[in-house]
Length: 146
Image (tube, rainbow, N blue to C red; front, side, top):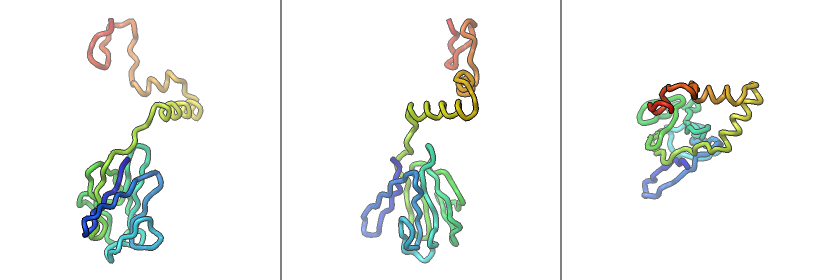
């Protein structure tokens, strides 16, 4: 599970779990994580999990949201990235969850129902090329079929 980590001045570590529900960081009382800094807007930025990605979005803040010292409007975060708002620094730790087999099968089933695609069509799209099993064409690993 991914976390935003903040180290307080007293050495205490604060771990914020990142989920599908956006975490709003800012100075306002209505935010999920309140940051006491005059450089931070009331609702400064949001961080959330979307599929297999961790995203951060600036919420039209006055002084900007920075990922690894680059100002961003929206960005995908990777483990080890540093998010800064005002004078507060947060580090991203952990990987986003990966899709399980049942999730992938549900997605394939939904695509079959919604778009009228058959299993073979979807398989071809995934593999990009289904070689003729009787030919001596190389497999994706470079070895000829026998």
